[in-house]
Amino acid sequence: MTLANNISDWIKNYASENNRQSLVVGISGGIDSSVVSTLCAMTELPVYALTMPIRQIDSQNDLSLKQGEWLVKRFKNVSHCIIPLDSVYNTFQDSIGSPFDDDLAYANTKSRLRMVTLHQISGSKQGLVVGTGNKVEDFGVGFYTKYGDGGVDISPIADLFKSEVYELAKELDVMQEIIDAPPTDGLWEDGRTDQDQLGGLTYAQMERAMDLDQKGAITIDEDTVLLENYRNIRKQNLHKMEPIPVYKKEYK
Image (cartoon, rainbow, N blue to C red; front, side, top):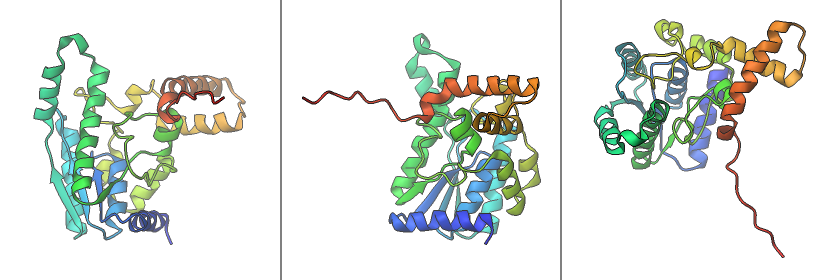
């Protein structure tokens, strides 16, 4: 069996073991969500693929719509749901007011609003919210929103490096324009990419840094700088990846 079949079967088996009837996944038009939504569709369970624009730039939203159309044409068990969240976000921002304005916090709010929406659909359809994070994001640099895109029920590709996700995308015939699109979280109205937000590091560089961090085999100065940059980003986001601290009372 192929890796795609193995992951798809894993998703289906987990749903069956936990008496879940459907799968709910957000599709951004990026490669990770395109791969995951396709793997979900392969299970033959009912799949709800959600496009949830919030002040989205056109190029990103267009790819999400194209991925939804592609899924529906290819799989009879997929429903593509377009749920604009602009008005919800605008109301939230107006309610918060200027004393608490912060661009990064608002960007993370977009992710959390989308996750709330995914769980609403999931709850109404006895479903599972399926995560789209890869190994570099989820366990390397913590590049996700806490209680946003990190608040999922299962993570089918969280043990795959980004390079492996690209290989899987080719196997699944994901649209070439999605494969070629620069990775982005879709949370910024200026269209900034993941690389822009990660200190200029590419996913290939971060994969190398993760490998160096585990093996500790540094032979050139360039790797020393790379590993330092990687560790700095990881340190800033480590609180997302570690269990929530719990005060332990003393028993006498």
